[in-house]
Structures are given as structure tokens and as C-alpha cells.
Length: 115
Length: 143
Ligand SMILES: Nc1ncnc2c1ncn2[C@@H]1O[C@H](COP(=O)(O)OP(=O)(O)O)[C@@H](O)[C@H]1O
Ligand SMILES: [Mg+2]
Image 1 (cartoon, protein in one colour):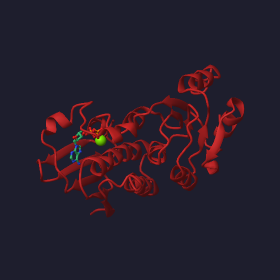
Image 2: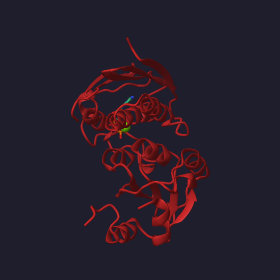
Image 3: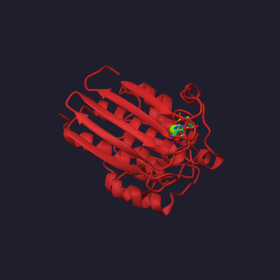
Image 4: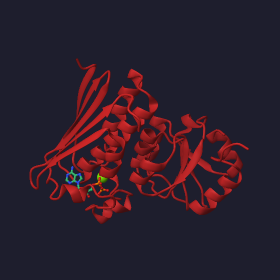
């Protein structure tokens, strides 16, 4: 499923990095510790986090995550948005918690092997 | 003979530029056409080493040395050094300050992540004398 489709199905709000909306989502990962995400997020993961500073874009580029979802109504800093636009890493926001967001995505089959 | 050799400077406490060196390294290796899994391993190590210089070290540099069969990263800084290297290598050990922890740094997983992803890691450091990490990646090794 592409990032674009995830946005539509789950009402997430794209706020930056729109050049990357056709990236393919292959799974998901929840984490606010950057080294943990570096070590454990899979390629093409949708990364759910409360971290909104610029370094999340670097981690996303290096770890090749598909898009970042800022949960709990967090908004990215301005320089985060600029960097996300430059790198084409979509940043999506939601008022839901990481738990709720992950639950919805998981229930819908995101990141689970096709049956 | 090396395919390529590059030197990048890293500035202490510069969280705005932090990560740029690793992204450049990743770009170079991708362009050469190395296996994506290998590029990912090098990228993870580059990032952890770069962030350690920014956060714990002093001004420093990253050297990238590429040969057909091996990629080397040497990351060194002129910061305060590491008092107990064995302790620093333990998962979960961190001296990161609260403001860095709030940003999601300081999980104490950086050096363990490097150890896991590099073919070999050597850490040279002395209290007050800076730190040097030598990370080697053999092309084609199972990891
Ligand atoms: N370049 C460095 N200069 C000084 N100390 C360092 C350096 N790199 C690592 N350290 C020390 O080793 C500890 C563990 O590093 P690491 O595993 O990357 O965890 P973290 O960066 O999350 O603290 C750091 O908290 C710090 O005390
Ligand atoms: Mg670290």
C-alpha cells in the first residue's frame, strides 16, 4: 500500500515531504528512541513517533522508512518540514495515540504478510 | 587501490547538521551500487558514530574508504574521550544529558548497534584525548 492510500484510508494529515507520497509502505514501527528505530524498523516501515525535531528525517532517510506519522497531535518543527520536503520523506500527523494508530493500521493489514 | 576516499568534518553539538555526513556516505555507496543490505549496515554505523561525535565528542571527522571488497569508516573526534570503553559498549549504558534523551538520543544502543552491523569495530579512546572508531565492512559477509 502506498503512503497516499494510507493517508486517505486512515485520515492522516500530510504536512511535509509530499514528493514521497508514492512510497510503498511495507510495515510499521513505533518508537521514540532513535537508535531503537535505527536498529529495528524494517525497510519501508511507517514510523509512528512523538519526536518532531529535524533528526527524524535523517533517521528516516538512513533507515529508509516510507513515512513518519507524528502521533498525539504533534506538529513538526519548521526545519523538520523543510528537510522532509528536501528528502521527499512524507510526514503525516494525527490526533490519535501511537497505540490507536498502530491498532487501526494493523487491523487493516498494514505490514502483515498477505493472506 | 581504493575506489574512493572521502573526508567529512563533524561539528560538536550541531544538531541541525547532524546526520548529514551519514546521508552523504549512504548516497555515495548507493551510487557505486553496493548491495542494499550492506549500504544499510554502513549507514546505521555511520549515523551512530556521527551522533556520538555530535553529542558526546568534540569536533571531529569521518573518513570513508571504499575498496571493491571492503568499506572502512573511521570516525574520530577531539572530545573528552571515553573513560571505560568496555562499559560504553554495553547495551543501555549512556551518559547522555536529559535534553538529548528528550530528543530520543541516549538509549545506550549506539555502540552496540555498530558492533552488530560492522564486520569489525575497534574503539580507541582515552579520557581527555578524544575517540577514534574504526569500522570495517567486508563486502559479501553474512550479517
Ligand atoms: N565520541 C565519543 N566521545 C566521548 N564519549 C563517547 C563517544 N562515543 C560514545 N561515548 C560514550 O559511550 C556511551 C555509549 O554510547 P552509545 O552506545 O552510542 O549510547 P548513547 O549515545 O545513546 O549514549 C555514551 O553515552 C558516552 O558516554
Ligand atoms: Mg550513541
